[in-house]
Image 1 (cartoon, rainbow, N blue to C red):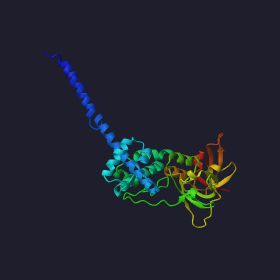
Image 2: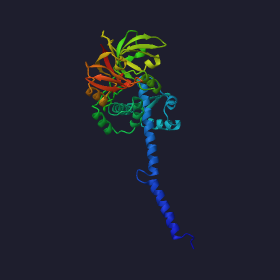
Image 3: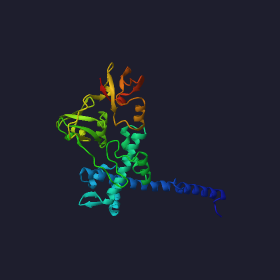
Image 4: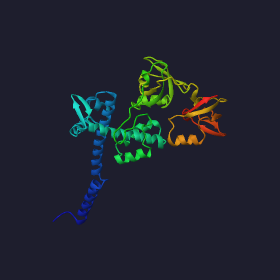
Length: 340
């Protein structure tokens, strides 16, 4: 005679049913979550390897397994396993110890770069996220958007040619414009040009450039260049950078004599009782923020002066077209003026 009662058997049946449901529930069961995580990890690692190889190919740097595993934030075993699969799929190839992209791998890499740069453009134009966050958020999104979603995003943004850092955005056919200009660190004294690109990697150098409040689109003149420091004048201010930092800034050098914007400075430098005319708005202000400033009257030629200064000096209220408008110093630094 069995010792199991019908009630006990029913309880076992219910527990097993619940366990099976939790394991194999469509799309949300533990089995599918684990399976999808493995798939996502493989896709993420594959795409990170391709993108890393692409950027180093552009820079003329060689990559091997040791340098690859040192940079990517995955386990060495996972990276090596993925690299083997990528070799079989003919996305990458070995030349001795050196890893390089095949044509298929390069096309795939360009699709990832396209998503990344479009998403950074979206964050800059359509959201209020600080520029420090753009790269990290784009790193996550580049693995999620499909080709169709990427094309829709590009159309929504007006099919831009460059991202907010000045990097060219590949087209959906894999074509990409060349980055125009040379590194600031290589410019001779008295060279004049305009900043066209600020590299956002490595992160530690990018944050130093942001801390200096250096903007894309600014016209500059090199004042000093030596192995210890580079000094340049832009928008009424002198900037001092270490050569390793200046190397991450690209400048389009003017081939002909161009009148320097010596009288142009930043609104943040305006003092009480000084009067100025608006000379323009920096390219650093984009999308809705730019349109708002234009609607408030920050248009070229408009007279402006300080109306009220807070005890700590930030923000300040500026009088423009009879209206007092408060701006933080970081906002005012992106509005250009000609002092009278």
